[in-house]
Image (cartoon, rainbow, N blue to C red):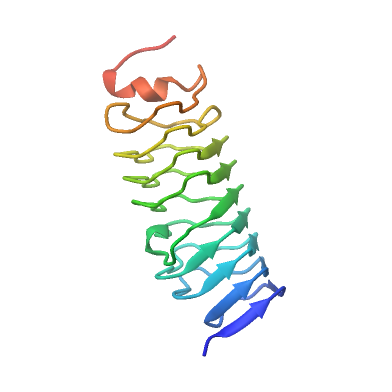
Length: 185
């Protein structure tokens, strides 16, 4: 039988028992390349943690907050459960993959999202506040009502993504025209 942990704080650890974690805080933990498969996190907070290349096969993330975390190379699309809900603040998510995921209304704030894969993902209502999207892939992605007004370094092909009512600023609209070779001055 899986362990159940509620309202606990874990600090400076580098492994976790299989089980369910409810309303727990993880502070300065190093889970780099750790197998977190089949673990359930509900209403949990990760602060100053390193989860680079962590394995999330069938991991459930429900209302999880990541703050100042390193999440490089994580394949979030391998997460399990019916819902995925997380927020990211001041996180490094380079090379992560959200392929085909439902991220509607997810918030990314001050994050580095270089070379992230959002192919076939539902990003409707998503907020990308002050995020670096250099070489990030958007293909057959639903960006309807997404807020990219302060995002930068992105290239989104309007012909291969849904952009109805998405918000952009005049400063970053060039990311929608890049494929046409248009020069804006």
